[in-house]
Length: 116
Image 1 (cartoon, rainbow, N blue to C red):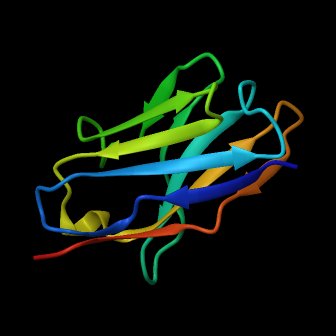
Image 2 (cartoon, rainbow, N blue to C red):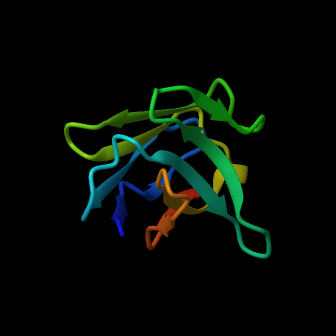
Image 3 (cartoon, rainbow, N blue to C red):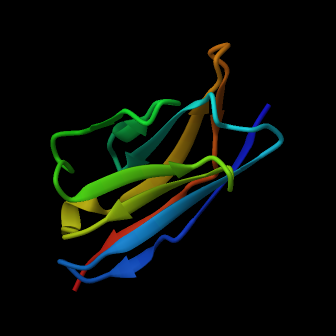
């Protein structure tokens, strides 16, 4: 099973940017369906963005035009570039990997706080 480690979270002012990274180990993720999710306090975990093995992307309406998901299979890493951040983006962000056999793996999460 693949292991995932997120990094890049932190405190940022509204309008700022952050780049999250999800480093995978234990298995090559080139055929995996990768996603970023987030969970704010008192709310359910929600899908932010996902990217297929072929590079097709999809985004939640709330982040379209501001966030970009990408993958570097050579580095076994997935990224989430977050621009024009707003306070409503504050959450713990989780990386998810789904194998071709539908096995799911999750990272431990990284906190993103958008506040002035």
